[in-house]
Length: 228
Image (cartoon, rainbow, N blue to C red; front, side, top):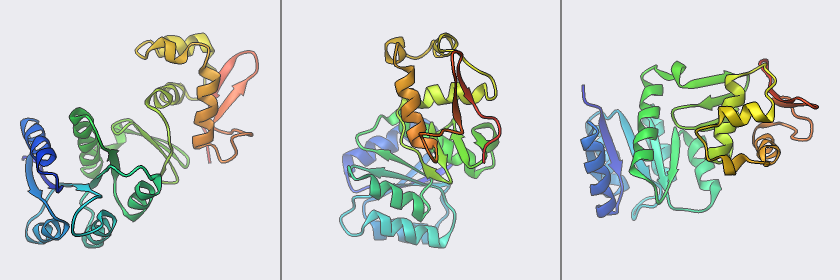
């Protein structure tokens, strides 16, 4: 059965582009140019997922997110052009499943949409790695601690994923470089320690005393299998 998507977006050119791209990928997309229109459409018919722009002419997107979530658990993917990370954090706390900043690549939108749909339909086990309070979402390529997003670049996500996939095993810098062979090597050359430091700042309760990504002196790094 074709998944039905509701796109709440007031930019007609962007809405048409998204509708066309997702349509070619096999989705049925309905467009609402205003928040109230989108809420009314949700009341009339079911949708499998909602793509919600936070900047709308008639209503604040965060208020729309709150009202949608009060009615049910239809997954919400937020689009935001705002530079303030607080808007994204509030949106996620209100119940949005993921967010994508503008401008974005259509392929990334499609990947994130597929990820939230898989999670909703119970296919999350293959896409999620759990280590205590830490969750690594392979589909959306994001990391969450206690359900909250951890800020991280795509290269840092790739590095963390390599460590997590070999949890409990000490990896030297050379081994890490080999495992990251699909990443641009210049990104990591002589800077693995810097990236590890930034990953710790994102996922550790106390970055100065890490309990998730641990340094083994003279050997490399190990990602702890057992975490709280």
